[in-house]
Every structure is written in C-alpha cells, then in structure tokens.
Image (cartoon, rainbow, N blue to C red; front, side, top):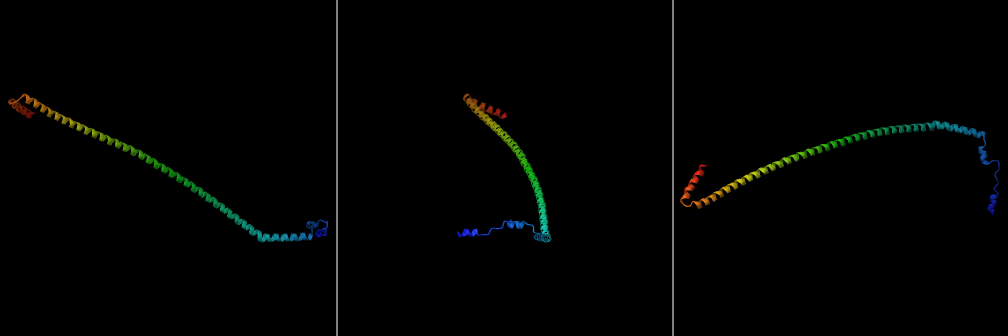
Length: 183
C-alpha cells in the first residue's frame, strides 16, 4: 500500500502544455542561434565536405562511364570474335563438306574402275578358259581320231589277215605300205 501512496503523491504537471509546448514556442534568441549555427555549418560543409563529395561523385561517374565504354568495347570485340568464329566455322563446315563430296566422288570412280577392271579380268579369264576348253576339246578330238584311226587300222588288219592268209597277205601288205608311203 505504501507503494500506491508513493505514486499518488507525485505532483501533477502544470497544464500549460508541458515540454512540447515550450519546444514549439518561438523564442527569438534560440532562433537566431539556430540560424547562426545552420549558416556556419552550411559554410563549413560547402568548404570542406561538398567539394570532396562532389569530386568523389564526379570521379565515380567518370569511372562508371569509362567502365561502361570498356564494357561496350568488350561486347563489340566479343561480337566481332563471335562473328569471326561463326565465319571460320562456316568455312570449315563448307571445306569438310567439299572434302566429303570429293571422297564420295573418288570412291564412286574407284568403285566403277574396280568393277570395270574386275569385269575385264573376268572376261579375260572366261575367254582364256574357253580357249583352253576348245584346245582341250580339239586335243581330245584329235586323240579320239588318232585312236579311232588306230582302232580302224587294227580292225582292218585283223579282217585282212583273216581273209588273206598266206602268200597273198604279204603281197597285199607290201602294196599297201608302198601306197601309204607315197601319200
């Protein structure tokens, strides 16, 4: 309870507006000092702070402008390099395509030449084989004729021997030999 009484004994502030009213009331002496301090502060700021601040801002602006121009130059160089790269890449692709086309043409010509040579070689082998077959056939015919002639001679000899026995056969054989020798 004593605490409640202590709060109650606090004297009430006068109702003349309090501290806020005193601060808002115009006092000519304070106003003059505020204007003097403001003017001195303004002169000091102008002399010592604004010039360095404006100089720093101007330097910063110059650096930013320079950085922007360098960035523009770098972008232009990058664009030029990219265009050059694209041009070189296009040329390389065109050159690669030309090489591929040349190789395809060469392969086609080589294939055609190989086919032609193979055909000629096959025709040559076939003609040689035909010539060998004909030669072998002719040789076989000749051998067959020779054997047929020998066989005919043997058969004729046997027939003649059987018909001409004795003295007639010797005279006939001699005549035939002399006639054959003349031919």
